[in-house]
Length: 159
Picture 1 (tube, helix red, strand yellow):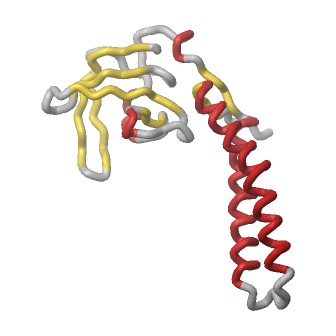
Picture 2 (cartoon, helix red, strand yellow):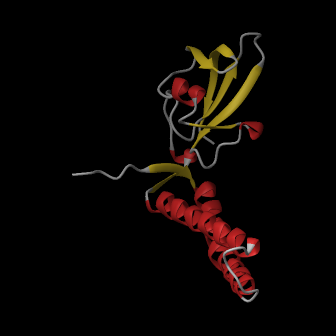
């Protein structure tokens, strides 16, 4: 029997996906249907580039809708403020010192919420996987495309 794997995410990530799903259903879908109808009115569909482009976009949007619906149906919303402990877990904000003792800070989030520019990394990323389960004071080695990186966990917050 197959088990459904939960998709952990923060409440704001869940809200953002819900908004995107609503936008795709209420704005994108109707505009694509309109574009297809307009292109059909031009006649011969075999050489109608507008029609083919609209149909391709329709396929992309339908795939995005299905993907978001799948993620939302399996969502496990986690509130980091309700967490505690001494180990890095999903939702934790981790303060690290890199090889040059330069401080960096990341929050461990779901893959749909990840944005390294604002300090959010996926729990599935190489660094996220290396951090999960570690404690303050632990040294962490991460293999990245640009080479191995070394960090020390300086502080752990649940904010």
